[in-house]
Image (cartoon, rainbow, N blue to C red):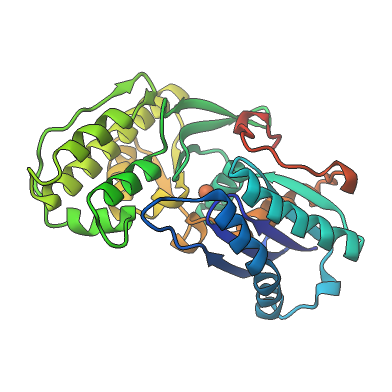
Length: 320
Ligand code: FE2
């Protein structure tokens, strides 16, 4: 079964092609975020312009013909409404023209499932860390249960916001990570409540120190404190679930330092850490095609006139 998946929940328009679990193509175009962050209408315009080009590139890269596609997947949510609409309409049009079934996919489920696929894990504790989300999850009766999560903003947005406030270029978490390599530790607020955590207090504090403390020290300490909070919450969840596998996924799972800290924690509990290659931790269409392919192989799809988007599509509501 040859499945084409479309991801468009935020700044990336991604198209993946998967054949029976094997990824044949993973093409994307990314809207460049300026100092004002994401402007939903502008990103949607970008996606609308990118859609046809990225789809054609994925088809060419996979070495298949559009007529060979036997199913379509798209991101139903969570994400930015205007961006999700473009992906959904592209997917719906393709499914209608090709006369093939269509599958709505939960973005968070896709991040976890692709990490499980690459890590060869069946039932791990999942640490999902991205721009808008930070959650610790475990599969229970075909639904992911959220054991812990951020009470305010996602860790990725926290790092990006700090990078923008500090005037870093590019204003992303990866620039924070680069500067952190030369920093030393300064105290910062640390907030974990059970398996939940918050990042805005830490962000406010770090932002107020800009110009007073060397930027390298701020970057290093911000990362160390935020990642330690995640590790503490994940460790509690690991002990509760007695899981022997942890998979970290989402855009922030590209962080070498976070992986290092989680791997150390996992090792102390005789557990293994897994993750996908970076290309598949960032938002991508292949993870959507992969999950849609799994669903289609079990006979699941939705009638074409029932496809929709849900900006706040909670992961607990998605059947896996
Ligand atoms: Fe994502």
